[in-house]
Structure formats: structure tokens, C-alpha cells
Length: 293
Image (tube, rainbow, N blue to C red; front, side, top):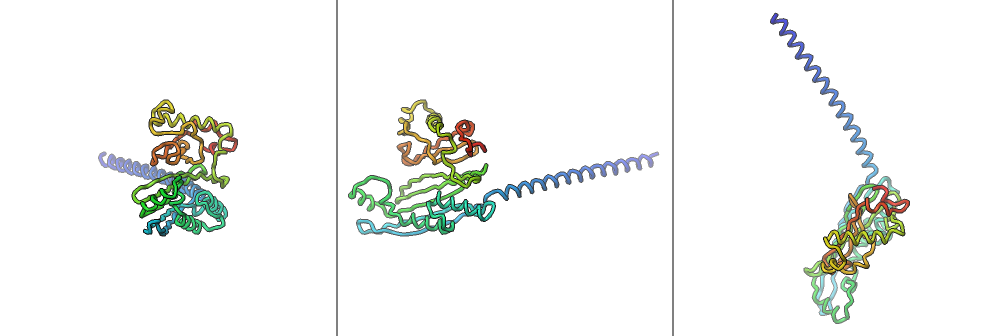
């Protein structure tokens, strides 16, 4: 009797082991199928996405100040750009758009040559004579004499890449001795039309309404209720705040960036105002890129 029970117990254990083994095989098979689907999906995404690469260039020059001393001028450019998108023809179109929109270059150039030309143009500019300030000759001469080192640094990076939209950010820092000024400019490309995204994504009659939203959002971000209170915080020209093309796409909405001293007295402040896609969708034009979000 004991022997029979022992045999039954062994059979039961073996049957249980076989069942567990079979379930394990089924599970492994399901996981393998799932992985295969994921790999196919990843391949599809990869085939439709952009391959980016970066290129760094620099240049050094100098100029003679009015007091006879030499001032060094250094330029450092780091540019991330699209290396491949879909096929050779589409890649060339996207690179041409990059060259004309961001580098202000001739689209007949190869992109590496365009970045080189952009770097040399920055270096060759008379930065002291094009600083945008209205000074008389005497003050400009004194201003020149105060500077021993002039450095321009430009970093072009990818800020957003989803929904067939890619946003590039061009950060420019100008340093005169130990005093630096920085600004950010944004460029948004529609990968479906191969065009720069501008305010035509909104209806023409909606710009004033968007402007009002931006003003209200700026007050909300600064926890104030009136334009006068914004003035007390150092903002000015609020009544003339406009909907500019210096905006960037983000995960939840669009952020407008204003240059230093465009809205605020602080030379180091770049006010940023964000509006959600939900709030902006009502203003979308017929074929607006916003309808993808």
C-alpha cells in the first residue's frame, strides 16, 4: 500500500512539473512574440524619425582698439543638425531649411560648409559697431577701450521632436570681458510640409485673443492682477506685448520666449509665457499643425 502511494505521489509530482514546464514555454513564447512586435514597432518609428548629429567650429580673430591695444575676439559654435530623414532627397530639403532659417545661409551650400560660413560671419562682424546701442563716437571709443576680450558662443540644439514637428533652439551668449548677455531663439519645422512653422497656424482673427491670453498668463505666472503690478516687478511695454514667432513646441503646449529687455528692464531676463494646446486649439487655422496635438 505504501509503495502504491509512493508511485502515485511520484506520478503526481511529474505531472505537476510537466504542467509548470508547459506553462513556462507558453509564457516564453508570448514574451518572444511581444518582443518581436516591439522590435517591428521600434524599427518603424526609427525609419520615420530624424537622425541628428553635431558639429563644432571655432574661430579667433582680433581688432585694434582706438587706444592701440589689441582686443581678442573668439567665436565658438556648436550645431546639432539633421543628418538623415527618410531618404536623401528629404534630408537635403530639411538641411536646406535648417541652413536658411537658422544659419541665415545660402541653401546651395553643404550643411557643414554653411555652419563654417556662419561661424566665420560671426567672427568677422564688427561686434562693437553692431551692438544695437545708440552711442556717440566718443562714448563708443571709450566703450571699445574697456574691452580686452570679446567672446561669442552659439549652441544650436533640439528642443522638441514629436508629432512631425522639430524645434531647434539657438542659444547665443555674448561675453565682453566678464559681462555676459544671453538670448534664445526658436525655430519650428513642420516635417510634413518641410516648412518653417509661423503664425499662420492660427486664424488671422485670433491673434488679438492669443495676445490677451499671453498677457493674462504673464500676470498669473507672476502672481499679480494688473499691468501696473507687472510694471512694479520690472516689466514694461506690456500693452504692446505681441504674439511673436519666437516660440517653441513642448509636451503640453507652446511657450513664447521674449528677448532680454523686450518686456522687462532686467537685461538678463527672458520672459517666457506658456499656453496649453487645449487653450490654443480653438484658434487653429484650417490646416494648422496644432491639430496633431
